[in-house]
Image 1: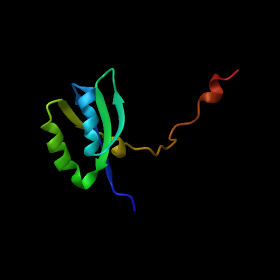
Image 2 (image 1 turned 120 degrees about the vertical axis):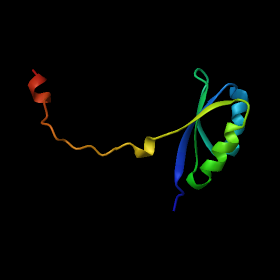
Image 3 (image 1 turned 90 degrees about the horizontal axis):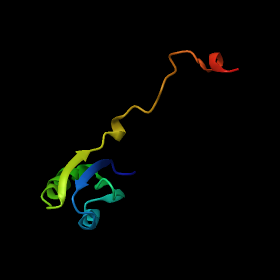
Length: 87
């Protein structure tokens, strides 16, 4: 089985130094323009890793991603109105 993964958005001041965040988990994306890193790590070790990342001098803020908590199954409660707008 695959371990539970948790996503984090880490706002950094130095992208060159942010490459060292790979030791905490998998770096998925680094934004050069907005200076943030999207990364995933194991859920059971994430608390300790966030504490250690917060102590780094180039880390400004760490936010947890709520992507796995967003509802992705949709129901069709209303009728389809596309036929009213067609020619």
